[in-house]
Picture (cartoon, rainbow, N blue to C red):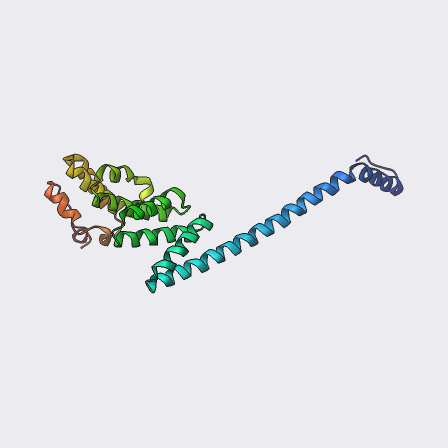
Length: 219
């Protein structure tokens, strides 16, 4: 805006500018205020949804403790259908899949674990589902499908377990070199001694690979 000699001229210039651009400014303010209100509504809505999902999950766990399978399954289905983005939906799918395994219903168990792999937003839950599904497929003699699930980058804390299962599969396929590599990865990725399966060292030693005792190294 140009410099004016008197306050009257400046005031008149402001009036003229607002007269010319006032409508734009008004609409801009309306849009900004609308965005703020929309943001507040979204956060409030998310909070309500989270509380509802939490409440339904609590009811599902209560049903599990009471062995009320009807309520357990209905609440799990509700969480998966209505709150798919919530971590409670992933937990529900994992719980139901685990129950299905205990009942020998491997088909529904696989579906539950696959749902978590496909839709869960929580990487740790996906890793757990991957490990459990891999183990289930091995039990069903579907070694190739189980092997296809192995992903070192997505295994996270379950890498020792999944690498050992990979080694078992490769050993049955007479791929001794691949099995040794998988077993060594399992051993290396275990951050604590307790994470290593009791048979892992035996498996390596049976293949002619000497395994140093970590406890002996520390002493």
